[in-house]
Image (cartoon, rainbow, N blue to C red):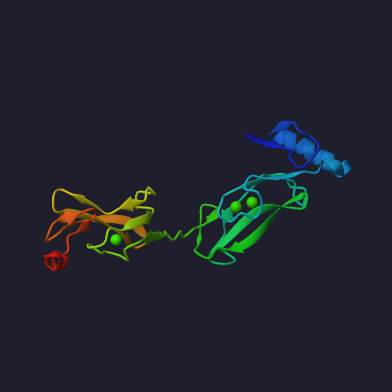
Length: 185
Ligand SMILES: [Ca+2]
Ligand SMILES: [Ca+2]
Ligand SMILES: [Ca+2]
């Protein structure tokens, strides 16, 4: 059972749609154009979401129209259901990255930023991004286990940390630079 509301009409009641009700609505359509309606669960021509349209198409068909992949016309074809005015309708869309389960496949490019330019053991850097587990906590390079450094870097667009054994020890989120120690002396 699908519940829709007449959000774009002056009827506020939600109704439950079954075949009988749809049939009744279709009967009304021919005589009372004020009650024509169409409802799209994904809000229109939304190629990233599999939606279903409840309404009547121009041929009078009241079957719900669900988005589906159709590779017969074009290889990455998506048949996207939408409300074409007051009518339920389909449009064919060519998904750039292919079609799967009634929606275009999305290629999300992860973004990652770090302040020390990559794997840089001698600068305490900050990393902002999402790791492969989907966590988006920014991190700062930090010392751990005595001389070891946890160095943040962007790993193919994902935030990641590697453990590095600093030759001269670790201090304040960076390896101690032996040269600077010599200069200080
Ligand atoms: Ca749609
Ligand atoms: Ca869609
Ligand atoms: Ca870094």
